Structure formats: C-alpha cells, structure tokens
Image (tube, rainbow, N blue to C red; front, side, top):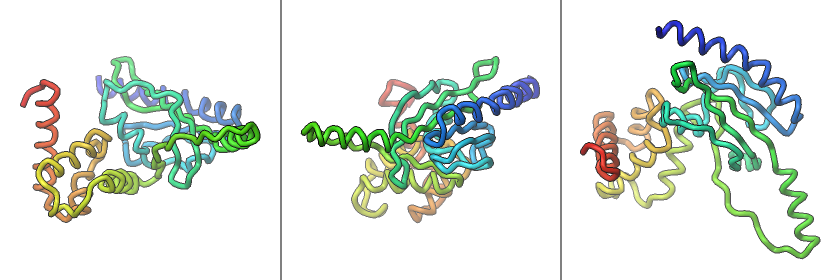
Length: 226
C-alpha cells in the first residue's frame, strides 16, 4: 500500500511540473511558483519557475512549509496571505496542499507574487490624494534553500521576543520558547532539536525534556491528555 501511494504521489508531482511553468509564465517576472514534496523536507523543492523568493530545485521548505508539515493531515490551504521576504520584498502568496487518494498531505504548490511595485504605486497615489495612512507591519518570512537557515531564522525571531539568556529564563519562559517553536513547525524537521539545543548551549536531552514538557502543557491547556 505504501509503495502504491508513493507511486501515486510521484505521478501527481510529475503532472503538476508543467503547471508550475504555466502559472509563472502567465504572471510574468513578478511571480514564482514552487512545487514541494514534503517527504524530503530538507530538499522539498522539486520544481520551480521564477525568482521572486530565490528558490531552487533541491532547496528546503520555507517556514510556511514547516508549519504545514507540523499540522500534518489537518493542514489546509493558505490563500492570499502577505509577508515580506528577508530582503524586504513584499510578497502575496498562496500555499495549496497536495493530498493523495488516502487524504494524506504530502506536498504543496506555492504561488508567490511580488506586490511591492503595486504597493509603491498605491502609496504614491495616496500621497497625491493627501492620504496619510501607512501599511500595517507585516511578518517576515524566510524563504531559504537550506533548512538549517530556516530553522535558525525562526529561532532568532522567537528568541528576540524574550529578554535574557537561557540561564536567565524561568521555567515558564523556557516552555514558552519550546512551545512557540513547536507551534511554528520547527521540530517537524529532522535534527532541529539538536540544532536548537546547540544554539541555546544546552544538552540534547535537556532540549527533548523541555519540548516534551511544552507539549504536555499545551495538551493540558486544550483539554487533552496531561
């Protein structure tokens, strides 16, 4: 059965490869389209057209993909959300999950459109019309071809919200750190626990302990098993 599903998944990905090129050609240079196979998270990009996010075949999933992976088969499409890349490009994206005939999520088709030029024109027209409104602050998304860099970016973003070193954090703050990273899909990536432990300067065993405690606390909070 597993072999049959993998064959089916391979066929779906192969069928979507020309769709990637077609969508990117339709929108032109302001768009890129990325096809992901989540069976290999650290090399999930199997097809790409365009260069808005700098992805390449063989590259890793982004933090958005990590979030989808963490949700597993409960994941759903995320459409028309807007973020900024780390170089400041304003991007409107849609992530459409791919499922096999059993309903299992195994990949995603992602469309990213550079809307920075449109925003600049909107701002100019607003200034000419005397409108002083400024756009809301948008989250920054890491689109990296190296999964370690994506994990590091998520770690740094979350740590920036906390004050003090690991030794200065109390138990609740430590659990919040691990729980927050877990919610964002960091620990769905192979080797991420060891990577986070190294960044914190703690042992692998300690990192697994805090992750387990954070998950237990979350389950208790939502009425699940303690």
